[in-house]
Image (cartoon, rainbow, N blue to C red):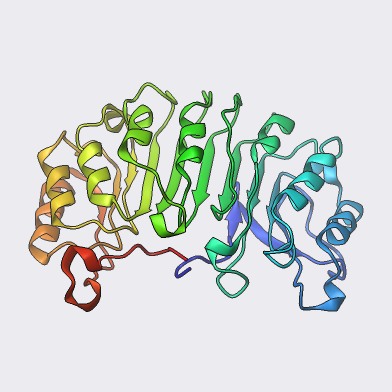
Length: 316
């Protein structure tokens, strides 16, 4: 799960770990994003529900704006419905909650494919004020279609995002969404999304306020780039993120040969397999127009296997 670290912030608020034995005084409840996490190998940590209960007693829950759900126990013993349902049950106390991230675990705690997720849409139906929702891990993840008036940011970090989740997103009504970031992953770990699943999103008919689109960390990044090259949604984006995947010269050429991208503020292609010549072509076509192009982290395929040896940044 290379490159996946603990969140440093959520909702623009700095992340702070809450522990039942945290020294006083604590920060004001609405000034930080609270991370609640327990180490299953440390007896003194107790259980996640005990830590959450202590948290609700230690701060003013009515002022909490951002909540990060970290490790809740052994990944194979309970899926994320355990902490998610506890948060939902406290909805009458968490009346100002605007952001939730589910599964803020690093590789040392669990590989991303070991994080057992669940149906996270209950958070949206329970918290009408929610502006940001993020999830790490695709195993067991479900996202049936939902309507939410205020949600602005939706992020799924995964080594394999199920196509059913992508379809749930494209069938949802999210009129305020301006930031969508999908780590699509690889088929070996459940990433079975195909271009057809992305077609409603690429058509530009969904999410009228969308300004940032990330279709990242994919083993079909070249096919995605070719589809994006003629996708109507691109014309109204400020940021396009195709990073962390298997992008090669063929995908980059498709981008350059497609619709103009000079209106973008940022094109993120880092972690790629482009030749130096193609890097120069991309930068030369866009940077003079003020586009910030991230071409860092050029990689070589494994074992000189060519296109077959390309790999995503995050898989297992």
